[in-house]
Length: 329
Image (cartoon, rainbow, N blue to C red):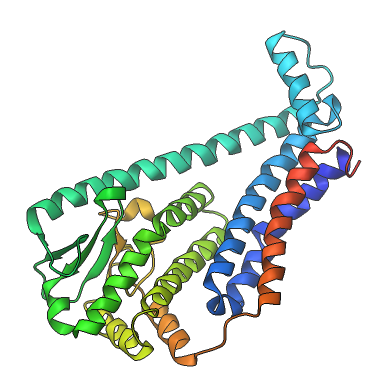
């Protein structure tokens, strides 16, 4: 398993640094947000698998010719209190680091979920006191606020889209429908689950710059996906005008969340309400409007096929290296 551990280490470094940087600078994701979203997920999963796998394979190298055999031998040592003389200092160190990193990632994922759910529960309690049902949709409530505000609060059957009366008075009926379609798309496509995963990844590895790039990219892509849903029923001109009106509201705090005109806050822990909504950064708004105005054609089927094949390979290669005996020696 000697070469396997080094190959996985090189793959982990590539997926943690140059690959995300190149993808974040590419222009094609705006032409196929769904395909780009799959690629970001594959990079994150394959990167984490390669990072942990490289340490595991190196640590278990003296015990077997693949991960499963090595784990079985290690379990026998632990359960039967057998001597660990076959393992050197660096092997034990690698195994300990792999275990600690795995525990850290899982703990951060669960902790982020707990914090988000707690914030959303508090926000629902506030909405129960301050919001009133809207006639524009069964999952829509209205708050009394002069500024244009639109966001959604995920929660399964309790999911709601929140609008301000200032927004409703500023929008024409078609523009209001575009806003509702956009926000409902966030809920229907479960975008909050993606945001939770990438927020947890960033919180677990804040020292890794590409975790920020990945989260920002995913935030932007989900807004594009929601825009595409709104465009199924409303015109580009209507959607652009709606975006401009909502963006004319007061500048949000950096951690306001994501919604019709913005992106998910990079620091979920700092979000006061756990929402998936609110006015967002000017850069995100400008990117969305530019995409709608440029009218670039979607990616060709061949290019999308290549990207999807790359996603499959990113997940299949490290998995195969871990479980297939002697694949790289």
